[in-house]
Every structure is written in C-alpha cells, then in structure tokens.
Length: 148
Image (tube, rainbow, N blue to C red; front, side, top):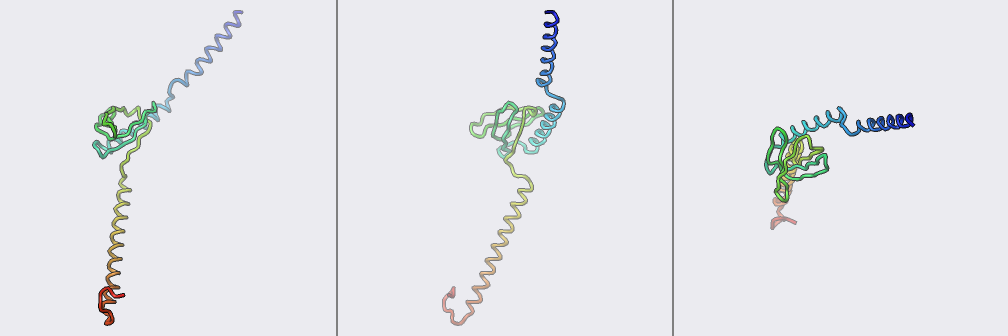
C-alpha cells in the first residue's frame, strides 16, 4: 500500500508540473508581446491625437474599442469612443491588434496622381472638342452654331 501511494503521488506531481509550463508564458511569447507593444507605441505616436486619428483596437481579453486617440503617454494611450465619447485608457502591453483608418502616404500620393490624370484628361477632351467645333463653324453651309 505504501508503494502504491508513493507511486500515485509521484505521478500526480509529474502531472501537475507538466501543466505548469502551459500556465506561464514562454520567453518567446513574452518577447513577441514586447515587440508588438513597441510597434503599437510607435504607430500610435505616428498617428497622433485628435479627431483625425481614428483607430480600432483589440485587446488580449477580447475587448474592442473604436474611436479616436485623445491622449498619448509613456505607458499607453486613451481612446474616446466614436459613438458615445466615453474614454478608455489602454496600456500598450494589453493591445493584441490595432488598425488605423487613416490613409498611408502612398495612398495619398496615388489619389493625387489619379486626380491630376483625370483633370488633364478632361482638359484634353475639351480642347479636342473645341477644335472640332471650330472646323465646322468655318463651313459656309453652316448658318447656325453648332452645325449639324
């Protein structure tokens, strides 16, 4: 009976210690979270504060926030809810994911180039249309403008 209890206790202790590693974070996981926190901090600093800095934040505890950044400090930032205006302080280490609704510099340049190309195309089309009308107006058979 003594041997059986001794064996059962040994198995139980091994079983408990095998799950102890699952309860704590591994060094790799801690390093990954620290890297993400530093990236979030840099991204938040780049966005700045104000109504134009709209973000969607997902925390490790599955809480979601959507609003604009009202304050930035060394430990975290404050998000004001888009609908209610209620503020929530968030630590950088709590953030699992974040997405800003702001346009990147490349997107802004692309939009500017597209608008410029469209304006130039419209000007060329108008200029070509005016050239055709001038050719018809010189026709002696044409009494009214625009000519048919």
